[in-house]
Length: 407
Picture 1 (cartoon, rainbow, N blue to C red):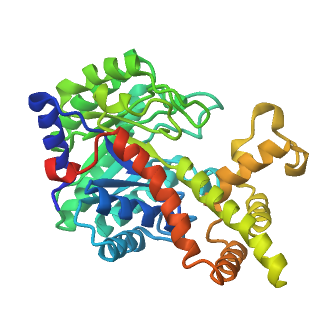
Picture 2: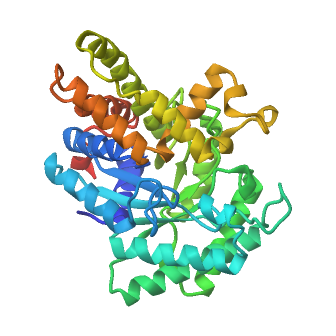
């Protein structure tokens, strides 16, 4: 398997000398079904695939998927064997920074402890064989609400975390890894062109000063018009940001690419990569909802106890309290039952990723599959294939079909 940095250099070469534009897809592995679907697509489309796992999803404590970094990589490799995948698969850390793990915010960790926890997780990712680490110290919970750390502070903390990772990597006798820096969040203070340019300039100087020029990032993340609630990618902004990044040897990467209206504009504007996550959770949610509708008729005909899959899932989301993370300002303080049906469904759909591994949800899913197996060959395969089709939508838009041959 080529190292990710080599793949990126080849992608740049194709763009600069052969006018072939590709955008690498990074799937957020927020469930076993999504991970399986992404490996399946990588195999049948013969394309490289990145897996951008946050510390909420995958961490030393198991995250909400139940996977440690080592378990996550082992699962990815097991699916690769199952589907005969020979395309490169790259496990990556997404948003590796202080207080970006929800538990650290809830526990109100002080800065030194938050940094320590992130460093331990970076080491675990390296030990597991991650190919890329997103270094993202752009949140500071010690500051007043709404206030972002300054660019020099972000640069200093970015360099501190990269230096830790490089020290650990060498101590573990591991090959070089790729780095990703920056954030698409407005609280990061890097979303305007002036701050973006200042960040890159100061980061370059700081890395050189610490003898870390070799760890210059592969990807730089920036705001390109999309977030969880907006779906239009801004080609003009992307082109301008790409021109700023190109001379540094890095590529621009977009997050929140979910449901984007114009995905074909990503490769056309020089975007090097794009993350997609919540959309695949929604597809998994919708597929299970469709299966439960079929199950209702089956159970009525055969007098079987139904799984109550969706009611169980919603109850688990509510009990987790993670749905409150996504409330609009006018909804804060309201009970879940007081929200509109449309908002309750959206919150359950969005929050499902946090509770796929909850015992009640696992049991309901097993019952659903067992009931449907009386007439359907493999209900789980239906869910995985539903997610796979959604992933292939981006593979096609990003010009990635058979990209492993080129890269």
